Image (tube, rainbow, N blue to C red; front, side, top):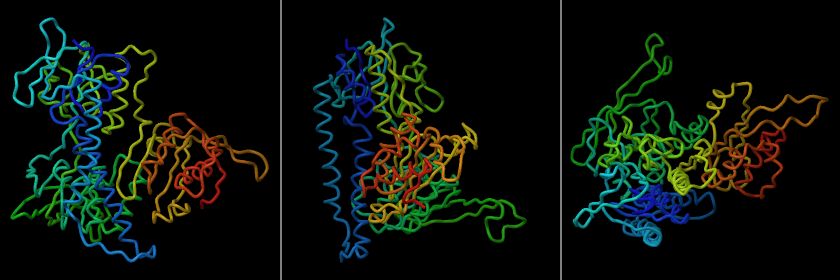
Length: 496
């Protein structure tokens, strides 16, 4: 009998396990494949490894503007694979060591079952085909992650039509890749393949890319992609994919508003069907909870989409059963799963004052080129919640930042904050500092690193004047944050 048995060894699962072990609890962890889950083996880590390669290539392609004479002779597929797997293996060895040190690790497929006495356990079928065994505990945590979401009527063959699970392992870039979906996964793959010489077309059913981000971030990244030669088709729905002899014909329907297309009759909304030809199609339309055949449905804790229904702390209505990570309808990000795992472990350990994860103040990051990151409310959300008159917006361009210019980026820092009191007095009076920062939205080099300062600003409800008083190093990229806060406080410096 353990204190906790965790079903799933991905970010959410091992966060629960490691935190609980640090609290002095006894923990068992059940994992069918490898500790580290999708993030380490089929998602975050391999994709960022390849994106690093693509980033180096971006610098090679603009080397002549830096005074360097460099040429790109193509990919070495074997070396690319070795680099990618080397990063994964190094991290996996460390995680496997920690898992064996801090938990009782079971390699097998687990299923939650109800015991005769009413308690819960996980029945484990070993991967080596041995006899099933039951792992008993006072608490069971469902942490089985997610799987790529398919599309009705679209066959994924793994060769021409792929999900991210298959597409990450390429050794040669496609000639023409069509990416269905302009969320984080789709935009990151576009950034991988374009520097390697691929023609890339991104197809998005909604009216903008990265639809969960602030609208100005979407506009900036669309402009950047088109400048790099990436075709971006928004308000475009996939109708069919037909694969013949290793080539795909993709039929899409493009729609537009009245007056948005030359010759549209009577100013009516319009639609047109187009066909695209490609040797690679990536279905990047999101991920679904991996809760099938876990026993959760039989216990009545799943909704109609397959997500676990929990309270803010991750507890289900079944006593002793918890859920973390992608099986919950919260942010599908590894660091969000870490945070949820810590909360569940601390609650089980009886720690006082544990607060639920605040997903509004959880940073959202996309590792495309240029990078996109945000935290807090978008401008639209802030205006919806607080009213137009209660919200102010300040945008600082990376074109005014020395390191941004050196990096060849024209991104921005956008600060959304509560409005301050109207300044009074004679001309030249220092403006009011404004209210708390509600959201920060970044587009540009290393945005996914710079978002850290913004996370503190929104979580601590800092006001622009307080943040403007903090000295930022010059020249640096994070100096752009200071400049944005200075401008938001009514004291612009280099910005214009």
